[in-house]
Every structure is written in structure tokens, then in C-alpha cells.
Image 1 (cartoon, helix red, strand yellow):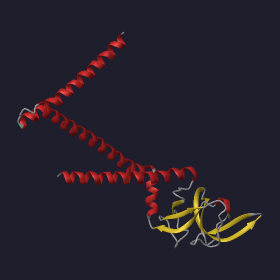
Image 2 (tube, helix red, strand yellow; image 1 turned 60 degrees about the vertical axis):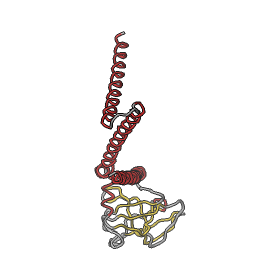
Image 3 (tube, helix red, strand yellow; image 1 turned 60 degrees about the horizontal axis):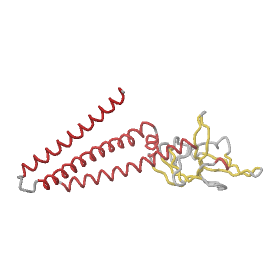
Image 4 (cartoon, one colour; image 1 turned 90 degrees about the vertical axis):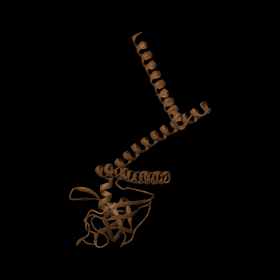
Length: 235
């Protein structure tokens, strides 16, 4: 029984650590995406695909991994880049393929197009506007999950709520361990005080009496403190 309890405690501790790490990663990505529009983790940005403009490379609902660009980095025709754009009046991060590169007055312009689109994108992309480049890694269907986890409801249900439950469990476990420790301490003191030969039942009764006396002393001390505070207030 003791082995089973220890094994269960170890499993729960591991789950708590995994959950803490996972929640920290998701929270970091969510905060980063709100601050500058790109969730950056060690130089890589996971992005959820919102349309089918790049089929068959990736499609709506997929999760792609992009690499955040460094200063002065340039790209060639055929590279897939992510950049801010406005689609139907909504600001988004677009990820399309470069079909042409032009240099205009020391400014590099990238002309882009979705693989599944009939026409090129309307506006060229300034090299300074490129946020990231597609790394070639795509996780099918995980974009929807990622959107849910980084949303308020998903973050609460999947991450925050389990952490609250784990916290409550840990508090209960600490309290139980404290009670068990006090019982063992009381038993040891009872053994030392009554080493003259009490029976096991008498020893248990002595322990219970010791614990009851401790509680009464704590209650009495608390009442004295309250009375003292009351008297100070009246004066």
C-alpha cells in the first residue's frame, strides 16, 4: 500500500511539473503574440494557418513552424515568408511564397503569392516587414488546437483549471503530512514520557490526549490574543 501511494505521488508530481512547463510555454507564446504579433520561442514562431491559400504546402487548421528573421536577412524566389497584411479589413499575418524579388532605391521588395491563389498578392512586401520564414515543419490539424489553447477559454480550461486543482491537492497533501508528523511526534514524546510499560491501547490514548491538549492550548492562546486586542481597542 505504501509503495502504491509513493508511486502515485511521484506520478502526480511529474504531471504537475509537465503542466507547469507546458503552461509557461503557452503563456509565453500568448503574451509574445499580443505584444508584437509574432509568438517567439527560442527564435521560432508557431503560426496557425487560417486559410487554404497555400494548399498543398499547408492548409487551414494546420500549425506551421517559422523562423524569426534576423537583421539584414534576405530571401530568394521560392522562399515562404510571413509578413503583416490586411485581408478584408482585418490585420493578419500572411504566409506566402516569394515569386519575384526587386531592388528599388536600395530597398528590397518581395512579390508574393499563395500557392493556391490564381493571382499574386496585391502589394509587395518590404524586406523590413518580413517577420519570419517558413521552416518546412507543419503539424496537420494542430493549428485549431493552438488557437484554442492561446484563447482565454482554452487557457482557463486546459491549463489554469488543472493547475488550481493540483494546487488544492498539494495543500491537502501538506496538511495531511503535517497531521501525520504531529501524530508521530506525539507518539515519540508519549513513549519517552511513559517508557515504564503502557500497553499499545494506553499509548494510543496518551497520544490522543496529547494532541487534544495541544489544540486546547492553541485555542486558549488564540482567545487570550483576541481579548488583549479587544481591551486595547476599548482603551
